[in-house]
Image (cartoon, rainbow over all chains, first blue to last red; front, top):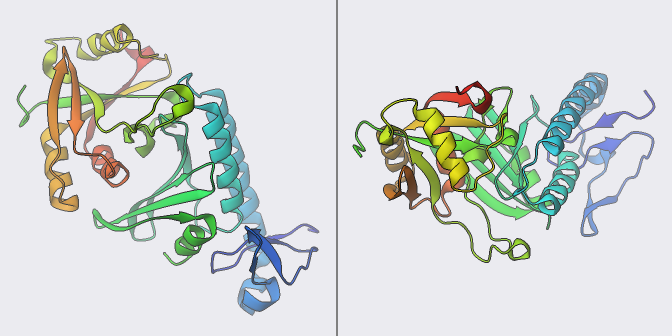
Length: 162
Length: 138
C-alpha cells in the first residue's frame, strides 16, 4: 500500500502517504497542517482500516458520478454540473465520514451530497458550487440545527466538527 | 382544492432518484443562470395537484407535464406529497408559512420557500406517501 490515503479529524486534506509534505496548500494558497502535526497516534495506527474504507467509498462515489453524468437532463446545466463535481472532489479530500453520501443533481445542475440518518442527524445536505463555495444544511430531531455557506475550507472544517 | 386532504405531485428527474429513493435535490428551487437565459432565481416550487384529476392521476399528470414542455423521462419519477402535513411540518420546524396557489389546470406553485428550500426539502421527503416511475405508469 504505497499510496495510502489518510484523513484528519479536523477537516483538512486527506494526505497521500509518500508525499510527506509537512505544509502544503488546499485552498487559495492557504497552508494546512501536516500529517505529523494533526494526527493522533491511534489514527495513524488504524490507517490500513481507513484506507480500505475510503477506497470502497471512493469507488461508490465514482459509480454514482458516472450514473449522474449519464442521466443529466437537457435543462440541467452541464457546465455547472462539471464545476460542481470538481468542487466536490476537492472538498471530499478533506472530509471524513462513516458512510458515503448519496449524490444527486438539482434542477440547475448543482451536485448535492446527502446523508440520511447520519450520526444523530436526520439529514445532512451539502451543495457544491463551481466557484468553490459550499452550503451545508443539517437537520436534527426534525429541526434545522445548522445552515452555513462558505468557502470550501470553511465548510469542510465545519463538517468535520459535526 | 382541499388543502387539508389533498396531495401535490413533483416530477423528479432520473438524477434525483437514486436506487428508487427520492433525494432532496428534487425539491430545490432553480438558481439563476444568465448564460442559459434564466436571469433570476426561481422563487416558487412547481408541483401538480393530484386530485385535480378524478382517476389515473399519475398518467394524467405525466401528460400535463409533457404538454407544458417538460422533458418527462421514462426513468424519471413522480413523487406524491401530503400537502397538509408538509405545511404543518414546515411551519412547526422552520417557522415558515408556505402556501399552495393553483396556477393553471393541475399546475400549482408552493410559495414562500425561497431561501428556505434546502431545509424544507427534508419535510417534502418525509411526507412522500407514494411514488411511481414514469415507465411504470400505464
